[in-house]
Figure (cartoon, rainbow, N blue to C red):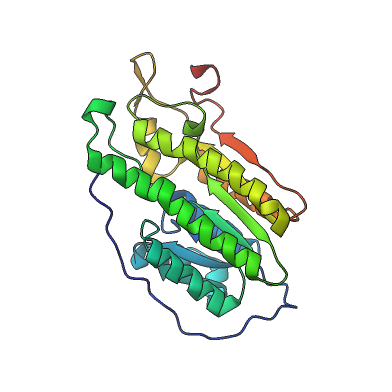
Length: 274
């Protein structure tokens, strides 16, 4: 995997101030330009949220917005901001823009992530390892850190953070040491942040997803290497089911939390590993 590319954050002009009495719910979705992030951003918009869409490419974020009837009807409900989550300075600027514009954040869907090229540990390039850690783990922490601070400062205090884990947080695939390591670490980060968030009404949970049908998982339908050395096509599920699950987690009052949820294609090789 090539080193991560870095993009300057695109700031948007102030258009309105935050009204503490408003019922407006503010969500941030990272990696909103494609796949699971796109599906969840669209579902949150359909559910009445105001959504900040983050990604590294403005054209992909605009494509997501073009697919949302709600964003087309009311452009003020959707804001694309370009920033690379692997860069802590860009993440800080992203959250500063959210705080300046809205005064608060009610939901972070910490979704941005990458796969690495499949390889045994001795054949995995160090740059590929670093890229996976920089985006999947460090980037998730940078976003969680900024969201946690904003949710502590804002009034009323509190909010929800949903981390996108993976069934790789439970069991690895062959030749996936970098991705699997970052997703196991994500589970530890979720649990630690959920504990630390109690005092501030910050609910932190994780959704572990298996074989959602996106461009990133297209190869699964053709055939994937299995633990027994065979190559078999795997079942996938419509990505809308993941989006529904995220919206249901997001709708909970802050007095309730889904700490861990696993949603997967029923027929995929995970339970029993076959």
